[in-house]
Length: 501
Ligand code: NAD
Image (cartoon, rainbow, N blue to C red):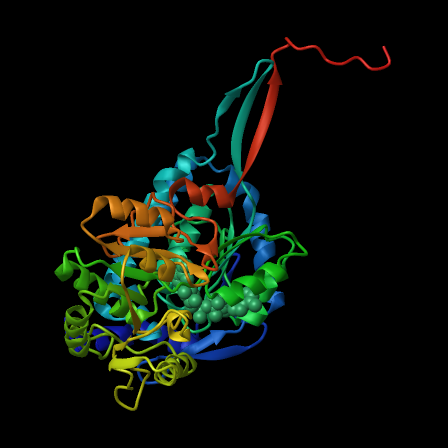
């Protein structure tokens, strides 16, 4: 496939959205936004993709009512029937994976080489949770001397899912699939900057036989539709992926209705390279984990901590490779880094280039815009940074790597743990004992030793500190979307206190 064939196919897929806009889907019906519509534009060239329904509190209320009405039947449906529907959703995602990937690239600026896989990963997420659906309600039998306790799980009710613009399709499936498998109904509010594939997901789910009202889609802005969703009394929980600051706002907004929250937030993840590591593999992983997905990735290794004995050679190789990365049109199969999502984000990333200079770190690669159309930035590297610098503390969320050096393990650990975040950590060493010791002390929810981020679906995914609350993956997802219930049966053996006898 070439860029030209991709563009031609994309045009075919976008045609209907250009004429009718990207509508909400509430109770199984297309619906315009009560707030009118807003434009969504491509980060590639700022061209208009389509008008998008602007959802308001009124639309959220209708969607929440639809989700509430659909909940009893969906929750009561036998697990194997839910499984079959989720499997069909996975089949249809696979069948339309190319369309999903093309739309995702155009809408978000993410490169085709990654998005073509992310679409299939979305199908995998549905298959994985489909298989777990029949056992979702299973509990335990717990003995006590005088009682037999039976525990079981029930879906918590209608839930809200709020997703960001980076890899939105994959992240949406990661939330929607377990919620549906658990027996919850869903109101999904996707990011205003990337509405295309959320619409495709909702359409696919209905085509696969999901009953009306089980998955509802309301587009719109965070402070409007998003806020209303977090405040709605019929929405029992909010699964949110996005910025740490937004997570804290959502917690406040949800306080009056005692909302259960699950947060996957920002990160400033360290990759620690010791001088005994396999440096070729470490270099590949460092580059992949900061520059793939345009660096717009919560798990990106945005802080490199390299042992000072190898720093000069490691940096020299890193600079050469960073300068060689192909920045270009996201639909060109050769492209490795595409444009950032929108101008405000581009300005934010560029402001960190200015900041890095003013903090007197060394701009060793990139730091410049590519072309004058679209939001392309050259892969950027700052060396000679120190732990107190803002470029070493704050999430930039772009192809922007800050490198620091350390003398020994103790110093590396102190630097690694010195930020507000704690999502992931990456260790490169061939000393097993050190890897065990270091990973035990590292403040992060997920750590990879001698590896880039490779997600194994049954494992717990989530962060500590300012990086999140709760875990996704396997049974951990069900812990969030379900309530535990305990029923104690007396065995007739214990004495009941007799008052007034
Ligand atoms: P964001 O917080 O600006 O927006 C995320 C979503 O929240 C959007 O749908 C937005 O409309 C909505 N929103 C905004 N304000 C809201 C409010 N007051 N009430 C309810 N909803 C509101 O985040 P973003 O810029 O879209 O995404 C980038 C961020 O997401 C980065 O910080 C990144 O690290 C994080 N992220 C984390 C993970 C993870 O797994 N930890 C994964 C992906 C992205």
